[in-house]
Length: 158
Image (cartoon, rainbow, N blue to C red; front, side, top):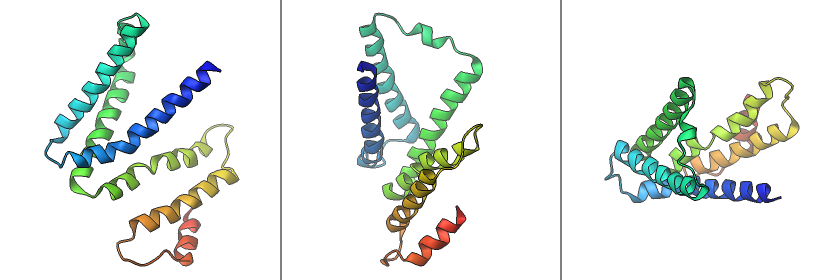
C-alpha cells in the first residue's frame, strides 16, 4: 500500500510540475536564453536528486552505469524536447505551445494499440474524441464557437 501512495504522490507532483512549466517559462519574460533555462532546470533537478540520494545513503553512482544507447536516447530526448519547448515558448503563446506539447499522451494511447496483444478499445476512441473539441475551442483564432460539423469531420480522421 505504501508504494501505491508513493506512486500517487510522484504522479501528482509530476502533473503539478508539468502544469507550471509554461507559467514559469512565460513569467521569465523571455529574458533567459533557452540553453541557460535548460541548464538551470536540469541543474535544479540534479540537485534535488542528489538530496534524495544523500537521504537514501548512497551517491547515485550506480545509476551512471547504463549502456551508451540509453544515455544517448535519454539525454538526447530530454534535451531535445525541452529545447524545442522553451524555444517554442519564446516564439508562440503559452496556450498554443501547451496544446501542441500535451497532445503526446493522446498519441501514446492511440499508438499503443499497435503493440502486440493490444487493441484499440472504445475508451481510447472516446478519449480521442473528447480531446478534439477541447483542442478546437482553445485553438480558435476567430471568436466563433465550436460547431458539430467540425467535430464530425475531425472524428472521421480517427
